[in-house]
Image (cartoon, rainbow over all chains, first blue to last red; front, side):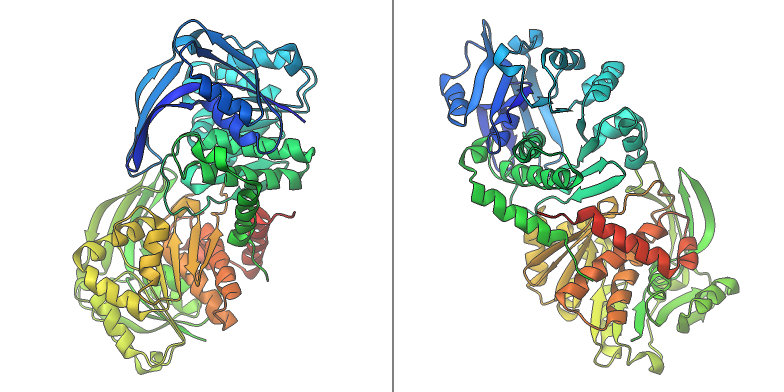
Length: 301
Length: 301
């Protein structure tokens, strides 16, 4: 089953206490695609400028990512610069230049419209709704969003939540959306809109899922060193939806396994800068940490 | 098997967005005792002033807590006042008056010296070491500490860590002690001192344990409302050590179950102000949430 992802393609400059990278390929659609590419066929929808390095496009193609939906427009690619201090959960944005991404209007090629899974990464909720109109009968749809859209276009964010099967947001965004500190109360509010499942990302504390009266927790993998948290959330989504696409079921057990897979992929991404680790990830790496996750939490009477 | 706990007995004034209490009984030894009393016989060592309400002592005795080691001294009981805002993990201390606790010198009654389990709650590490010299061949010893002692008496804290079987600290304290953000690196440093297990409390994110090459996670119980987080850590320790005392084993499986029991008890405590919920807790309550914890994390291939 193939997965369509719509989101940003960027050149990121990131500094952490452990090093830095300058104008490395990033963006939500790139992290998601590379993560999900380990599980299923991925079709990317995005936009870059004429300055986008051909080797970055080639790198995505080598991972099997379909770039028919990637538009090359006159101008510069979206650029983002950020700095993390030792508390790697706090990021300071140093610079954001939307460039060609400012006028992004996703257009799905005909070959994308029958995709089984659709992931609406963090873009304007009006565009997310528009993408949903361009696909025919997807098997599973999911969305992410961010504080900017929740404060600026809350009604549209709500419409997207009503329209998808899975909402994937971080803890702070969920609290902001629902206007309450209680994750339970906030989860009830979101699930009442209709999605089957709500996945809440908690950064270094892992992720939790609310679905059909069930609460399920994936702790974070205990890492020796986190070099660069950029892209962890989108890689998580890639592992999560990638696993569901490959399993072809959305039973409760499948959703639980998917949450673990998302956590596994995210745990690898943050060990190195940018997308590097996603390029060398192997099935054995994934299955090893998947089994470790079981040991972290399973207990016997 | 009986448990000796040495720590503070206080009158706490606490304000949270959900209400407040004025001079309610609290302190590390009280929370620990009431929590552990649901699992084993508890013997408390502490000091109070002549103003300590007789009904508070009676309440402890009704829960089976042995107060032979509780000294009543001329003067006032330790008083603490704090305020939590909506982010219940941050507490602002409004007032601390040590009163008779300032000159506390724990003296174990003869009937305490053969206790199987000893918990050194957060007090001056010099006193913690002194208590260890007063017990004969305890089966299991554990300690807690706080930022104040780690910055002021780090060498003594290290000595205590070298002398106990289980170190129970919160995440911030562990990072402060080891001077690193990495919990793995910090855990290695503490375990190299000799303890069998290191338990790290993460507040609303649960608790994790490092022991004998194993990493184990207890997520936090998802609560509708947290009214007052005061005493959660000491109640956790009470459930953890209480369970080990009742099981009479410190195998890896027993340690895992104990971590869940600690989390269960702590999850109840924070639902109401002060020690209230510890007085009404029933075995069914504990076993219900214990089973829920399994469902939060167990997954099948």
